Amino acid sequence: MGDDAPVALARLLCGRDNPAREAALPRYLQYRGIAFSRHRFVRPEGRGDSFAVELGEGPRVLLLCAHHDAVPGSPGANDNAAAVGVLLHLIPRLPSRIPRGWRVRLLFTAAEEIDYLGARAYVEEIPIQDVAGVLSLELCGIGDTVALWDAGAETPFLGRVTAALEAAGIRRDAGYQVVGRIPMFGSDHRAFAAAGLPAYGFTMVPAAHAVALRRFVLSPVRSGFRSLLRRPPPFHTYHTSDDALETLEPAALHRATAALTAIVAGLAD
Image (cartoon, rainbow, N blue to C red; front, side, top):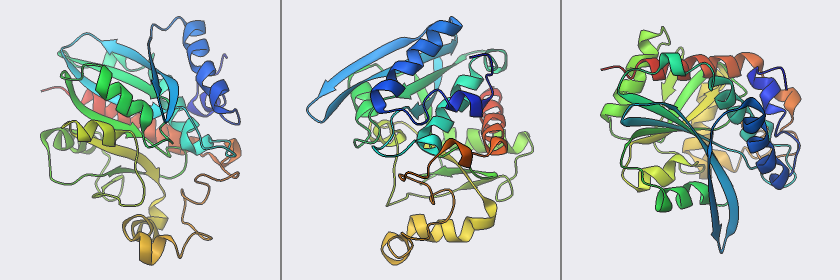
């Protein structure tokens, strides 16, 4: 467990079944001496343990979440071990970047693949009135551009996020993109959005496939189903047995890490 690069940390989960993935996370946190809380839920649809790591001491919370489960039959590298690896990598690196008045909660959710069950249970049972905004990390291991998605009307939180990226030299269209509501896919942030919080998806995508990606995710009938056999990256491995560790791009995970670090630093008023 000596290598804490994001790709190495993704190995904690990749290729394991969901009970083993769920057990690996607290074992790693305990080994590193990292304090965490556990949210255990049981629902008719399923059960699981979500884990939260709190960084900083301010009253306002930026919540960054990544689900630790995968669909059966998939190694679950990009969906979603890569995102978990990014957040684990950030744990020792973020505290010095968190502005006064803020704290960052890293939430590792269970059962996202069951209609965001872990996130929905968390919202129902854990107070969230101090959460100022949510980003859920999905598919963070392939691509060179940040995609912020399910972004409808502009909110102060979204403006703060994009301003922080711009201040760090990550330019719109070249370094990040903002995409509206995606009809065919979703992630944990939707549980928080349903509770009235500004909440968005955070994904890495390859700029070279931007046009094909927009068609694929925004036009599911015309483009999505027609493209099932030739889906553009990063969806070419999504929910398949090809979602293996070897397909992850270290540069993509490092870009995601840099973008999230910039977002946290940019929370300062």
